[in-house]
Length: 360
Image (cartoon, rainbow, N blue to C red; front, side):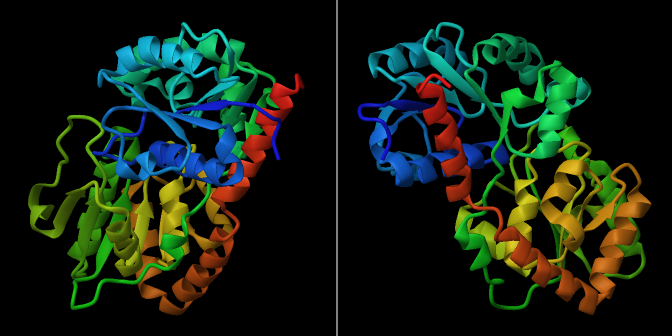
């Protein structure tokens, strides 16, 4: 049992019904898991257009009456949190509001805005990043999702490592239970994530073109909303590419399970949730050779140089052609994915909350 009368506010105002990125998934699943562990202590703050999955979480909830992000964060949220008498406000995706004067915690998912500014969106560069220094200076606790993300943040922000609490991501059980959709379907490569420049899709398209030039009857399926308004240079590949946008969770799980190979070709990653989900679904996986992704995949995933389309093509080619090796890796990956649990993430997070609220 937690301390009597403690009220922990979760800023989940990043959650929208029209998208569910890795960062959004973290906010949703952590809120769900915290509700299971300490429902009487959790107060959830949401946008007016929050997804139904969030509105069903059985905790006290407050919904904003405006949909404009700056107004929600900088005006409504600090007012609503003060009115709800929360003892700690945890910002799950964004910097702590300027006007919040109570105890605060913040999750920072990666160091892209500081180490790879060119890969950050305009909103991140000119709105979020300038607000983070005050949020980090005031935070009673700073969370991140991987040791490699922590190391990047320590380097970028010049903060001591002990200020960060690493609480690794989880994988929902639906991905372990995923089954490929029935009926005939051409073999496809699967990419899951917002279609932003950091996802490195032009290099993947070059690799995909090289694989098709070998006579392979492959399709490429892209799941995720467009992060930036940049056209994909699909050219002659257009008939073989499916842009699905955001899809329901159950459909996403089946898409993982039915893929010939999952590919995560990102240039920078702090989270890598889609890789863990693909591993849980038992699909052969190829990922960029990045510390955060090796932290998730270990030796069960094939890695490639994301800046070299030939390296990406070679890794996918091996995953497709070495069927026995891919089956062994996929089985080991499913076992490894069992390490990633949202209840473990929530329990570690809750311990930090309670230490903070005791004055530790």
